[in-house]
Image (tube, rainbow, N blue to C red; front, top):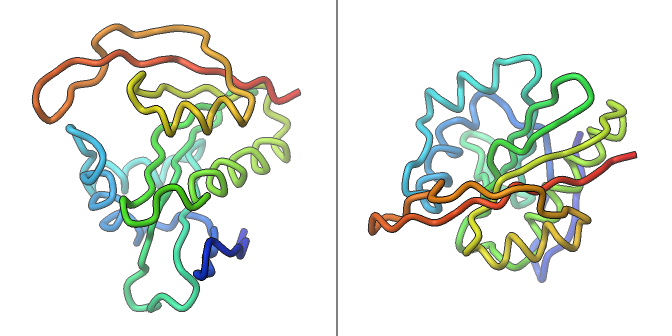
Length: 165
């Protein structure tokens, strides 16, 4: 899948994640998470059959090393799916890239005839919560002290669900 879109004055494209994206994924993940996943962890996930995902990059970015500005990684098992992780680079946040990544996942799950999509989000991440609620997700659970900040403070995860049928 390759979906072009404009955000401000820049043109971006959403495309399938590739194994060679793992290094960029590690770097982006480290920007946003106190316990980032390694390149090897991403490689291990990308070769699993039920795992799929999408990357967003600027049009015209060099082909020798992909400039990934965001990605989403998901898993589909039977008729339910989960977002494993989603990240947009700090320099590209609030431009609609997260929405485009989520839309790509939702299109994929529609084709696969999935019934529900789940995700976990830090209760303090107002921007992500706003996006997920606009996309029709609702709270279905809570995990106390699930996340740790870089300072060692614990925050809770909200478990969210969107029905797809």
